[in-house]
Length: 286
Image 1 (tube, one colour):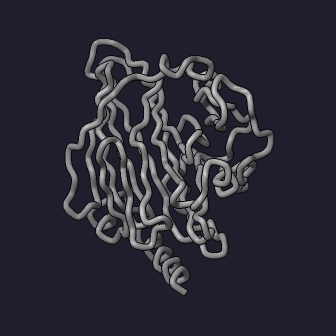
Image 2 (image 1 turned 180 degrees about the vertical axis):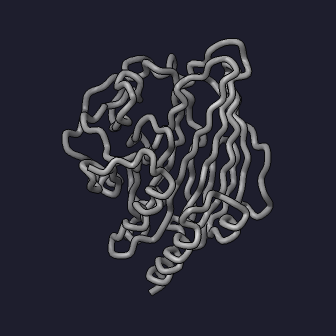
């Protein structure tokens, strides 16, 4: 009964904020609370499976040509600082400073159906930046109640327009580093992705996610623009976002979402509705 009531409440909230951006109004109704420290973003809510969720935010900023190169030669070093944390735990502001001089300001907001990310990247230097993509690493062990082996069957991407649980068809096993699995975005060069096994299928959309231990909640994440989806070597999932490099003086906006919502009886329609609302420009239904 509790999960049904939660689902009904979420449906009402989604309807109320169907076309709304993260705002003062939307974050005040959010059940989620945020905390960032030592490069870990923690998300808490009373009914969240596992009590809290942690994201390595951010794990790495990366150069192109990464699919067959030592990882240490791909990563661009960076530091992240907390600029602002609202007392109610509903909004954070961070700044990443890359070693090549690029700065990226992050506004992270708790909303009705999860977390919204708004990024503004700038290159104030006189040199082009090779920062092409970045990794938020979502740790889903507590949410799924699973370990490195068993969380695969809880996890999914979308292939041919359908939710497809892992391991997906044509599971790749060969790469510079194993294990793991990568699905590239349609317009991304396969030479520029994570040096883990690259699945030959291109996903139907930019969502990657998993179900909770009792399958009553769903977690999913997406970014615009996106570089790749990745099932990692720890109990983690990635939607790695794309920057594409920055010329001197250039700036670029990036946005992302982490969806956390009940899914009674496995109903993912609210998730797909939210995704299509937030990312209409790169939703691909096949």
